[in-house]
Length: 169
Image: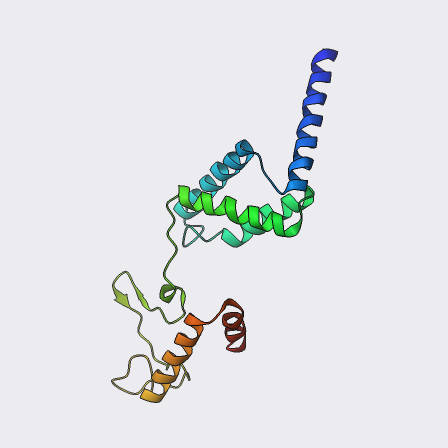
């Protein structure tokens, strides 16, 4: 019995040392990586099929933060932990055949879903009541201004896009 306990303790010590070494190198072993991906893919699929999330990407933020936090607690540097969390989730999303929506579909203005148009009563840009015969903008001026702002956001650098989004809130 003592022999088995000693072997168990040695195996646990080797596992702890391997994790510490991997953390210093910001790496995961292939087996651990694959096990995490498999488990996360199952969680993502289950949450979506149960209706707990509206899309396969519904848990992306909390899962990434959780993985990153766990890796940091194991001694990983934040940037390495974040990069690894992103890689693990990217592979999990590939395994569940998740396809990201287009840029346009990710915008507030995207109003067509499953072939139905969401009826608007207010201008998308200024929020004034829509005049009769108008379906999105109260005037050509609001429409042109809105489209110019969206084009600027779409083609902006990452830093500029963030600044524009924050300033429009």
